[in-house]
Image 1 (spheres, rainbow, N blue to C red):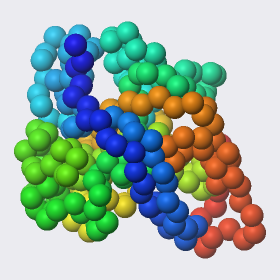
Image 2 (image 1 turned 30 degrees about the vertical axis):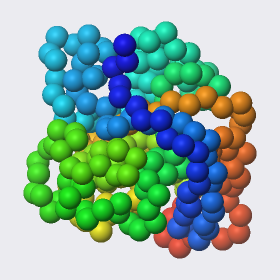
Image 3 (image 1 turned 135 degrees about the vertical axis):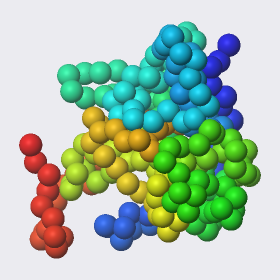
Image 4 (image 1 turned 90 degrees about the vertical axis):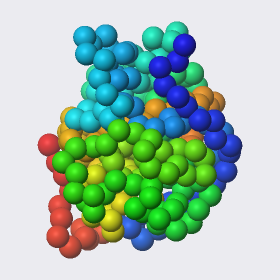
Length: 248
């Protein structure tokens, strides 16, 4: 029996925006599944065999690498093919695997918008926990109104890790997280807001939402492309004002 409650979504399309490159583009998506809510402390405890049962609050303080490993653990627990393999310091997404994974950025925004085109899929006070609520911790999932896909907490409460690189030219291996958190001002809690962090970074308002879906193309699928990542990592011409590329 699955520990996670996922909702099958139909194929469709979503428009994405890269502010630094001043570029907008449309992504066509195949059907996939995504969690009705963020992964909770209770779900994490159940899978990992912790002595405490946990709560229905979102799991937080988990970094991207830990989220990737957690997805694999969830897959193995249900005899599914793990979505990720580790080669040296690199994480490889096996796109044809049946197991749990992080959503791509395009999948996440498509799931969040649920057919809407504005910054929110409803009145923000009714669908999201934000700084307006003056909270010190994330709230239990599912207390606010869902979107048209029946998904809760895609905006507010906690940010959610995605698979994609944020901006490899500037931030190297930083990964995207989406959705806004309980401490964020309302102007920041929007379907299009992008932020990111290093794979080893964690934060008290950053968690994850599970996805599933297998695809044939190992190099480009659901809005992600290995070639596009390589191209985005190139720096040509003068550097934008105020920053230098990240280097180790």
